[in-house]
Image 1: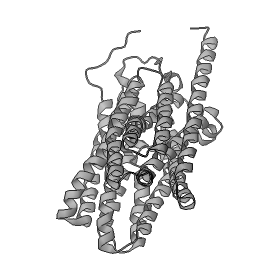
Image 2: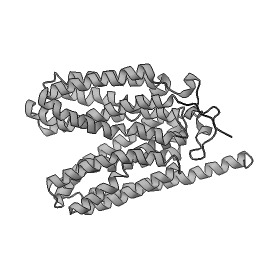
Image 3: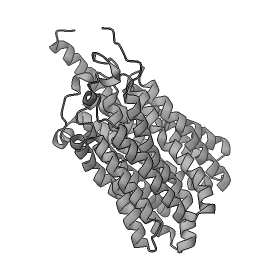
Length: 425
């Protein structure tokens, strides 16, 4: 059946609002690596105190986001994003007057942790997943590329702000930016789903099951926590995301000291990390877009296999050439998988309970990241090497790939069953 589309689809406005929320969330967090040095010099705090607040932020996020996703399915994405914008701006504004580590923990660890669950990788991608089916990967790619792009932009400007207005002034700019670029667009432009304004996903006049995702047949299915945790398909996706997230953040935190231990200079190691982050922007655009034209689960398998190869290269990288081979492989394969997972969640479980599913997924990845970061440091303290960490990460990625293969086979079985039920049509 022929599909007709209007000249402009409002879903792209939703993508813009989601882009801004993701960009502000991870842009301001990305710039914190530069800001913390000025804070340490000014306040005389230890690195452990600062790192503890960061860990607290991740822990709070992992807990709260599980419930935010469920609430979002009830009250809508617009309201959650607006609350996130208010809390994010408030957290950064309060950080302009902090004087003690306890105050910092309350602002950055607790308040910003809660705020991040209302603005980061759950609300925006949830809205985009509801507005798009056929073009879901492309829309998700545009939304999520805001994460590395925002980090690059805020980091660049933060260096100048620190010289002119200091770290307190920099936090104030972040607060005002959050209020303006998140709250206003969310309240004025965000729509929870296309049906709210008389439209259908992708701007179609009459919806049809997409052969790549087969998602339209499950869009009305409701997923409770009980149903999610009783589903082998859901567990396969959740565990794959847990293992994928753990490996990725472990590399971001530990790759520089690992490369230095392997004989590279500090400059060579940090340059490799910077190039990795630069390539991640291309990865975020490429993989979700490709997955609109091939089976999304197969695209995820390819991405995970490349990450396995990249991690093996990292483990053995003892020259600048090997380090940049790792950077090229991992830089072009890792970040884009976030878009694949976000799109695949909507493909497999439909649009109705997408906030709930994305909340569970975000909790899984956050716990995986926290575990990997902690044990990476612990393993190094005990063995004075990261070899065991990377070996565990490789094993985890192999398992994540196997879970994805299970999803490929289970989906194929579901499609065969549907054809039998529908008389082979």
